Length: 201
Image 1 (spheres, rainbow, N blue to C red):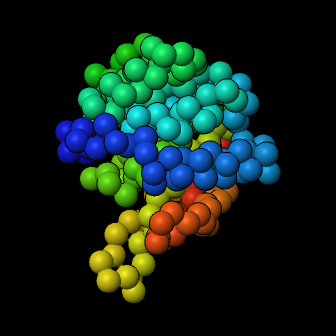
Image 2: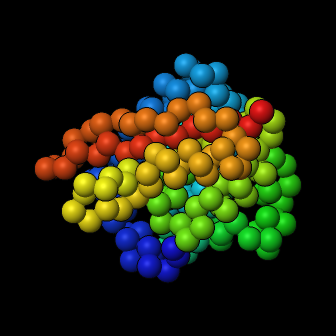
């Protein structure tokens, strides 16, 4: 992913993505309270942040958010929000490669890594989850929301529960949640993504 998302940046903060971000943030707050996840005062990585819709919603609760996305257009929109007063968020363009990981933003581990509708688009999902797990401090958590792949779908897309469980466990994360994250109507469609939470022991 990367340049292909630039064309969506100008209109991303409209309609469906906003509704999705509201619901994802609400589900994160709910699970953080239920499972004692690190969110309040946390150091967070928003992986595949887009224009920062999720980061905006959790910034008031967290201490600092590193918002990472490969799309220059998306990051430019987020940078404009930061310039306009969005506090506690640091925008960074790139992917999780050595060059990015050597930046000061990654000098310290994270309490929480979130990925909202990102992982199903990755070329190497299990490998990325292993990389993310290495960025967590002990007790830190990785939370993802993704379209769920079902064999009966006409054009199957997304991640299956088996694939997600295997990726989290393979990265050394304890699987705390693997279920529908939320269900919210938007127009004629219903958004009901799979939510997974893995914690580093």
